[in-house]
Amino acid sequence: MLPGDVFKSEAQAFHDFAKNYSLLSYILGREISTQIYSFEDSDGNTKYKYPVPVADGWGSSYPTSSKFEDETGLTPVAVAHTHADHTYEDSKTFSDGDKEWDKNYLSTADGRGQVYEKGGNPEVKTLFVDLPTYKRNGETYSEQLNKINSDNRPIKLWIQLRDEGSSWLYVMFNMRNFSKSDKNANKAPIPIKNNDGSWKCKPIQEEE
Image (cartoon, rainbow, N blue to C red):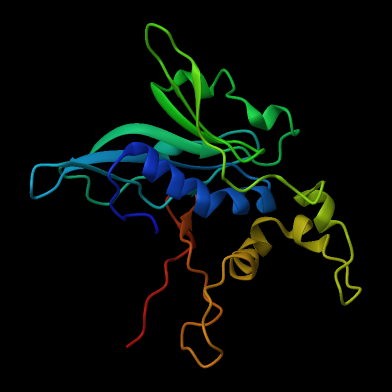
């Protein structure tokens, strides 16, 4: 599922966000964040959804920059973010800044989905253990990007390109399984924005 889709619980909305965006966060070395909103459907049931996330900085996130264009009937109930290119240990914990939010979900570098909520007895709770991890085959993504690919061409260049090369990375790592003849082939399906609200990667516009 994608941003804007409807979920039965906050946790399900967070899980979808983390599944979609954690790997991009590791590859780009940037935190990615969003807000989770609640609303009532036509039957009076409380449902949840999250808007297109924003690509933040290294070690910082600004989830309130992620919002719907029309928030009528929507109530922000929590924020969610990834930890990206931190040291492996640091990326498994909530920072002091993370704990300033009333309710904050975190996708950790070791594949866990956690939540921290202020209150009488605030604590970190682990909700999921099936999220993308920062290490693959014992190596971080940064270490893998410094290697030589199968064509003997160095791909460390992607690290140096950062924002300029990120649009290509979105396509490379988030490509839909289109056939070669499909009009939408090679377009990135996972949308994301910059902090200023401008598009970093627009959602696919299906062509008729």
